[in-house]
Image 1 (cartoon, one colour):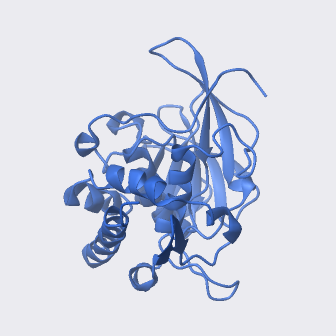
Image 2 (cartoon, one colour):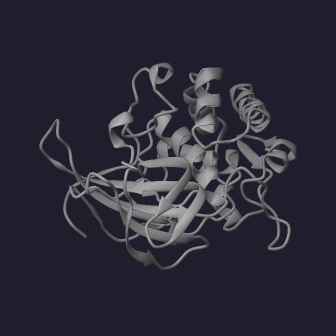
Length: 279
C-alpha cells in the first residue's frame, strides 16, 4: 500500500457548526447537472451504479437504488463527528444522457487528487482497540448497518493541503444498508424509516460491556465495546443540534414525516448512549 499517515477520525472541532445539509465538500462539491455524460457502468454491490461526467467535467459515481437516501444521511452523521467519509450528494431527479431519468440518485465524487486504494479489514487495521475504532463500531449498530463486510471499506490516498503530507484515509465506502433493521437474510431491511424507529438499540449492560441488539453480519465484532467507549461516541453525537440531525435526512430527500421519524429515533439512541451508567 502507498505510504502516508493512517487517519480514521479527526477532531471535528465545533460539531454544532457543521452544515449537515451541504455535507462533506460543502456547496462547492455539488454536481453540475446542466449535462451528465455517461462514462461506464460500475460493477459490484447491491445497487446499479453509473460513472458519469458533469457539466464542469468532474467525475461522479451515480448510485440508483433505495440505498441512495439512507447512505447519504448515514454518511453525513459520520462526517459530522469527525470520521473520514466519501463526498455524496443526493439529487431528487436527474437525467443522464443515454440512460434516462431517475429519482433519488446519490452522486459520489471521484476527485482527481484522491487515489482509491485497497480495502481495509475490520479485524486487521491500524486502529483496532482505539476508542475511535470502537466508536465507529457503535455507530454501525446505531445506524442499523447490518452489512458489515470488508468489501464495503476503502483506503483513500489524499494529500493534506494544510500539512503537505499524504494521508491514508480509512473510510466505509458503502453505508447503504442503514436506517432499516438488522435481522436474518429475509427479515433485514434498508432505508425503511418505520423499521428503524421500531428497532431496539441496546439490550442491556453486562458489567463494563454493552449487549447491543444487533443481528447483522459479523455480530462478534461488537462484543468488546465498553461503556466508556460508547459514551465517548455518545458525547460527540450529543453535540449535534436537532436542526443538524433533521438536515442530514432532509439532504437525503426524505419526506417531512420521515425526517421527524428518523430524527426522533436517532436522538433516542443518542440519549441511550449518554445515559449509560458510569463505571
